[in-house]
Length: 454
Image (cartoon, rainbow, N blue to C red; front, side, top):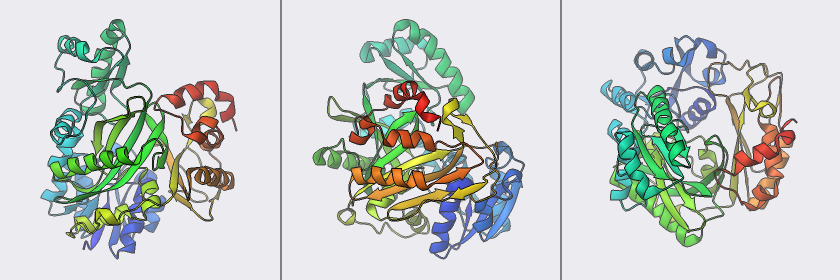
């Protein structure tokens, strides 16, 4: 078992990892920027090290500063959380080269699955269906025009090294394609330092469904699926498990394909295999694998009773996978909503500020993962995610009712949050019956702007 863990992250995920490690008797070291000196993860860790100024590039993305902090405090391991360096193959390699344990997959696995094109190739080789599109990277706009003969319109142009919804353009016609291709290329180069693109056919009314896997480099299991179809600008805002759209037979096939892919790439740790599900054709397609713990992992923990972060730490510490597939069962339904410091009434403009009053919801089936406390000053330098509200109940209908109750209990004053969005969504008839897809929320926001002024 690991003895002393450095958490190379901040915010609610750093708090989450610290708690899981301390439950296992692992000492914890937090790192923080000058802007986060009073942050909750700094207060909860056994030790904390200042690694630089507020700018992430000079602190949370500074590999040498993080490794120096690990060495100086006698750590034997590093957990990257999500975001920042979590899917950086060079960081995984550097941690290992420093004689430390990286809590996650190898640098090679991150490279393979982090490049969306090589991931498609690996998925296809493992027998996992992929969205029709280019066989690999499209090296020029001339080559891309040739792919259009197979995909037709609409077509999605995507960054090979992409993530977080960036470096993506949709073209509905030849004229749009000629504009969208260079735009996607420029955005991909600016965001990821890699202008490589590939193309996929757009699946109409697709649902976004992902499978949670755990693996130890040899064996792998799945912890069933989550549905993340409610998205704004390709960013998830509401996640739930399980998906009500899948039949038992299709669920079994989908989850088995994720396990097959994890085994094929000798994956280690927690990972998520993401798919688009075409309702009309009753067909799923692989889109990517996230080689890290996901923001929405608590909904899987709620329905399975498995502490995914603790399992990551056990695997990284050298324990073989201790879970057997037949022992993993689904109980009830869980929903997670992401509370961001944003003003929904003003096109979700960021709203950093000071938390004057915080009332955290409680009661049966309610979990609140956050970085918040009364008097906390939210810094303006980082992602706007403040907290995640997770509810669990016997049925989806009961979970939505519990979500409404918990949202009404929740009070955060001093800053604007996305709470009004979730109260409105929980009351919407389409959401209540699960009749949504990945582009549904964009249209709903246009029609329901007034409802978000609460």
